[in-house]
Length: 315
Image (tube, rainbow, N blue to C red; front, side, top):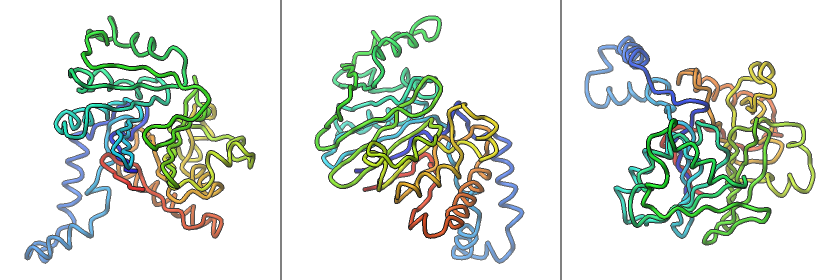
């Protein structure tokens, strides 16, 4: 199983501004000493010492992930603005196949706004399977692509669109078992659990964790326990989560608690606050690591990462 992140921001796309870029360049220049530019080796050493927030970017696109099964089946999760870049990649590499499976967690704007710009949908010969546990979701998608919201309707998409309503039983896709669970979020949101052989990836965006999610009952244990990777909403600090109770998002510290409780091996902090710059996000990652160490042995060997555009993981 291969996982790639194409959009990781929450609520609204957040591009890097010219001022932010200028501030980064200025910060790098201020750190340069004469010996840092003496030769290629010293330049590389200087770059290696720079903090992550000056060299890397979280990315500004909203939710979209790509999952490849061991047999090459392509699965996409959500159609935020990140799906635009993914669609371009797909049509540029036709050898990857012309069939994909697109799962929706819910239908808030930041999770569907990229669908009208998904290139494969506008190409003959492509088949796109669309999935959701929400009854009548085809009409939801078609309604947001019509006047006055958008000038082009889904009817003009030449690709073969196949809509699948997900019931209660898990779905099997060429050796990948997909199951789902409703999480707390205004209007509802579904997490997805992908299992291939003995490897498990859980994606749970737009999730406000509750006491019920921590309960050691059979349903929770079967779904969450010992997952290899959990990518989960961690948009807030703890103070923000308390202040914004019932807004449908979690804090990074609560995400660490949850992953520790269920023996998760790798935790991916996801659905980043749009007002936070990259420096703030890397500070949150550092704080999450500190909090994990504070939990002591209960946290196990859990690894914590920030979801970033372009991040690739393999199970």
